[in-house]
Amino acid sequence: GWDDNAFAGYDGTNTADEYVWYADNTKITRPVMTKKPNSYGLYDMSGNVWEWCWDAFANYPAKNLVNPDTTEYTEKNARILRSGSWTGSASGCAVGRRINSAPQNHYYYYGFRVARSAL
Image 1 (tube, rainbow, N blue to C red):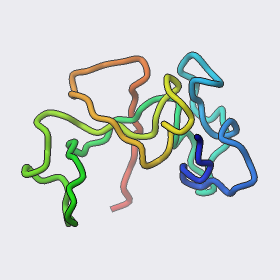
Image 2: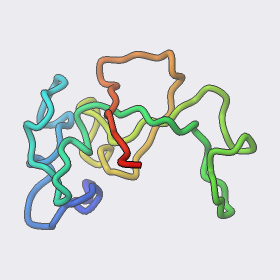
Image 3: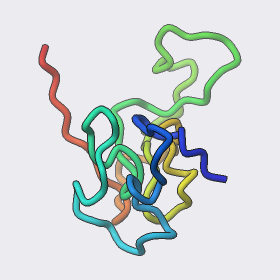
């Protein structure tokens, strides 16, 4: 089942429906900022569309790694997508959930987040 603590900023007093677009509450991609922000003030960190990450996909090995993006563990051409989408369950929108796909794949439930570093 859905673990309400599974997405960043959940404070335990509200429901996933207040923060996340997923299969039970929509059948289409929704505009940003139509759900509540998390406790960090960030919108849409879970659900709506899977978000592409720069990281190459790798299985998590049994040992600790300083940098998991090593060729020893990386699958060729696969990149990580995080946060779940409206095509899946609420539990699939947990922050720790991830899938992988080839960068040339394009689906209407894939997106990306533009981020800027202050450095």
